[in-house]
Length: 336
Length: 197
Image (cartoon, rainbow over all chains, first blue to last red; front, top):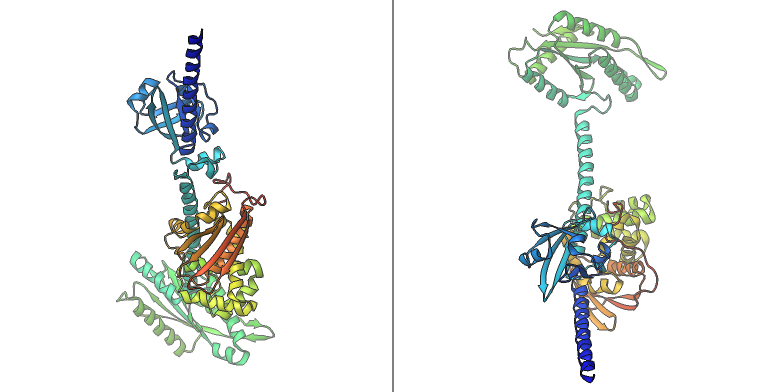
């Protein structure tokens, strides 16, 4: 009787000590890695760390009922865990899409200790399971990884916004560099670029240089505001009398250049010049005054140019223009 | 680095006092432009010119202006991302203070160009600390006082934070009276919406 009681007490004490050992073990495990899982020799989960409980709350279920080992793919039951002890495992939840875990399993007496961590999907996992920094051991770099992800996203967004702003400024600067501010026409520099493009394409074209007659008189008698108005009106007429693909530039002052693409007949340019001069000679009303001006024009054809140098063509067009001036203004001269 | 500092000062003046006041400051500092880019590099004397202009504009010493700047950085919606980055430093204010000497490294990890002065942390008693600031960014310790006071509120902690000038290096004393004095502001590691944008 006494002996039996003694054995019972010994058994009880042994079980109790085992229980104390187990509690000490899992207590330490939960601090070292809150994403631990302990599996009994019969394959059931007997302990789950506090963070792992967020996605696998139940103990008593079979480990392979709750988890799937995807790498290596041949780990399907407890016995297989022995073969991959200490190796890197990739695991998922059997009844849920994601998250994926990196894991490592080690046998301890008859049980298995399994450590899990979120891999690169840590940000999604933290969001999904509403985790905080205290859900991770201080040695776990997961929180650092989330910090870095967020910091880098902010930095890259800021760089994107900066390059958008700089790109906008560049576009505006380019536009400003190519445009005559008063009339909105292209400037001579933009026209030269257009000419270079035309030359390399080999298409024929005509250049028409135009200088206003009596413009100085308008400026002197009615002021710069009247002069500016006349320049804007001239720009409008030039745009209306040319086609969409042609180019109209203000060279500066009261001089303009037209680039007529595909035009090679003298008759066509004579007609265009006559229409332009006719319209410019119509009285232009500014406030309570009327301005009377005219225009002298010089024309050159691309196929007439012996040397296809752009500067020479522009200068020859100028020569034709001054012939018009000398011949009494209000006319067009074709350079030959 | 200077881009961040100048941009922060610009946002602080613009959000707190308005764009017109910022334009005054820009004129006083003789900038010649009105907008700083955080990611661009500026010569250090520009920052000094702006601080001098702020002192004249507000008729306050730089210590007060920079402390206000520090408070602004933690509390303003404009700079919410910065508050978030700081809150990664600890679960509560006590933990944050203990990780304060890691701040320059954490900032550099986020962006290599950010070079904060070194920070040394000395324990001077139970929940009492002395923070020593290294050289490299004049006035940083004053801004840090503002940041720490605002962050204590943000965490819901009660702390006494004082700037100690006079010694060779700038120092800040922190006495943490109560780590959970009030609820503070919520912080999620990974917010559901892209509040990070």
